[in-house]
Length: 255
Image 1 (cartoon, rainbow, N blue to C red):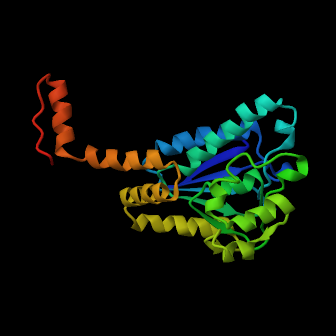
Image 2: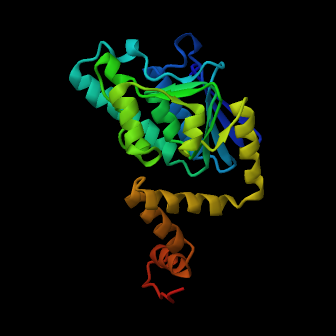
Image 3: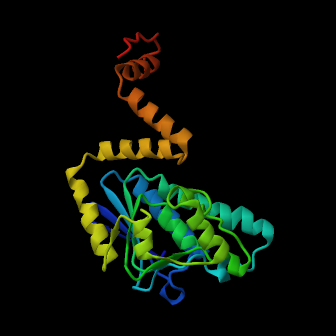
């Protein structure tokens, strides 16, 4: 898992993509490592925030490593590369903890889709955004035409995907895609993450679920999570469990 490093700094988890020779392009082992780290983070209630960044100052992530998928058959490409990537990106998007993408450099293709799966983004003034898939004869496969459409205007996405144009960090800020412009994106992301110590972790988790439900991010699961949490805190739930274990009819109070 050396290509995706997880560091725990207090109550903040920092995930760093480390494939600098290829501008942190994603490989199959990197996607697998990212999923493993996300599973650990998801189950650790002591982690208050997650920051995702890339190594070096040139690129956050310049997409998927062509050497990793170029040899796949069409069926393998669709079933494994695209679907597995979607599963991992969805896991990132649905973490209970707030997430920040620290865009230390360019975010292209799958890298831009990865940043879009985070709750907010901090961007270096040197970074640019792009959807260059058409240059190599493919299309966006990890939610570039779905989740990203909720974060950027449709004409801007068409500008990138259809005409291959790059978006500057300054324009990304103006469009609301990034929360902050910072020379050192990781430092600024850590400063934002540290403000969570003043917040209720339960309140931020529920707020995130409500926002995702409204935005259409796995709406069904978010609504059921909210409803289940409310019922789980009721006296009726305690009575129901106790009655089941004691093999008796429950007496519900409606509270």
